[in-house]
Image (cartoon, rainbow, N blue to C red; front, side):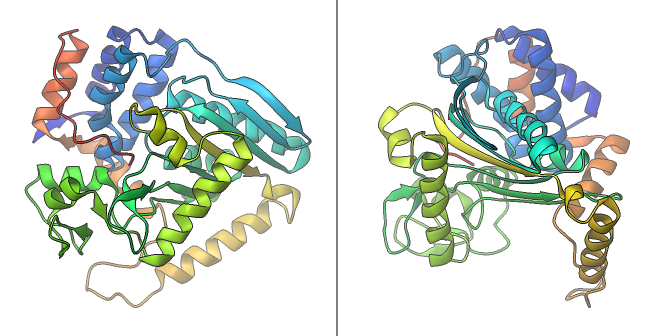
Length: 351
């Protein structure tokens, strides 16, 4: 593992994006998001995604100069075409647009079609919650997970985000529909470790906690088994309907990269227009305090609310730096120096 500081990582990623042709201001934003994700412990969607993003730019699957265009407006519901711009920039823009509409009308639904991988979806939950807004968002993806009862991939793992504001730390849930994301499988495999619990089936149909065989079989386990499978189906269907965009089968038909042309939904609510800011804070604190007061299952490992672990990891990373895979770090450094390198990322997966 390589040990790097927050600033060194951000500057190196930003330089890699600049070398790929991303405009300076946009490169800075994207580098910040990737670095924050890494600092929060989500290296799979931080530094580890940088080489693939650069590869997609070079292939023409990501248009670094594109901006979203309006398609339709129906009151607080809007549909926009992402025009294959960088997914991070599109998702931040859609979140901000939702905040703008919700500030006036109390609620907004922004459908974003024809966009790209948003990297860590939780980034947009943190962004909205830090400004006092609730966010419910999700994306569909290409097929990477079998439907319950099937063997071949027919579902995306369709990450789903819920975030609520709270002074002292927003409450942010960020989860894929699989028990573990493919990014988590990759990180665990690179460390030479096993998953805490079985995460899918190997090529012989045996449930396993070894990440490599699951990546090879593409038989990742839906979270909650049939429940996660059903949830993934509905998220895909509604993402496509509400954005007038592509469902998973349409993304598959493109035969391009991970999440290229995907559909995303951003529902933003201003809860201060309901009970007021103090009521929101009181409810959030009561929920967090009640969860934190749980009797621990293991000594020294208290129950956390969603997002609490990320806050701790961010504080530690900012203070002491962070460990990243040395092979990935070398690849990102080479990209920053504008050396063409091979894509050593795993299969074309979604999350």
